[in-house]
Length: 296
Image (cartoon, rainbow, N blue to C red; front, side):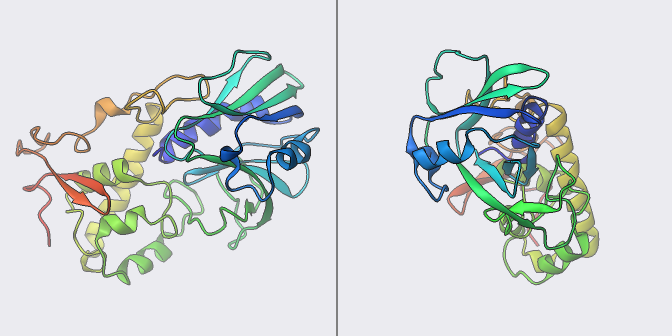
């Protein structure tokens, strides 16, 4: 599933194309793409047509396009969702579900296409509500608002408004594996299996160490490595293992070439040479070095 870097790459690509653009028309080809929308395809098309998009905003793995009132188009990419920019009248994408035709005051006409092979992603029109802390809702906008569907999602560790003290308090109260906390989007958002494994490897922390057993120095190290791995992934366009993880132009990211632990089962640890291992973890897998990341 796309994590913070992959979704941020999409948001940044959409931003100049959609900001200030007016919706000329909407075509819903598959209503399975609207599972989070309160109405059906006709309702989505009617409510969006003629509206103006204000920005492209992201919190964690969610992104949204605020409209010219208190609504926003909320998008979640799921496992294989893509938001692509295309020329007007461009041929259908293979797994195209929704097409939004736009007129931009500078770039002219273009289309935003939502394609999704596995149909786990979604689009919806949702109401914007004030943020609980009064800070900007997410990356890409200074507005202190967030869609109701995203309001329960915690801030991510590269958000300037991320409350580190609050995160530390939550961590100290959880007698569960630290990796489980990193994956909990209500505690800290944007981190999935890939970047949790990478950050824990870099911080020399075993993924099954209990969160409340981590000393302050280990927490400091972990937060620093979480931010570092996310920033490196952003610089390289995210991680692409297959054709599903692409930017708005259909281009893949390159961070997969820089992975130190994830997906490298049996290969030598880049730090000590011990073969990396893979174990089952809550319907996923954890990849780590049994020597560098000893369990407390």
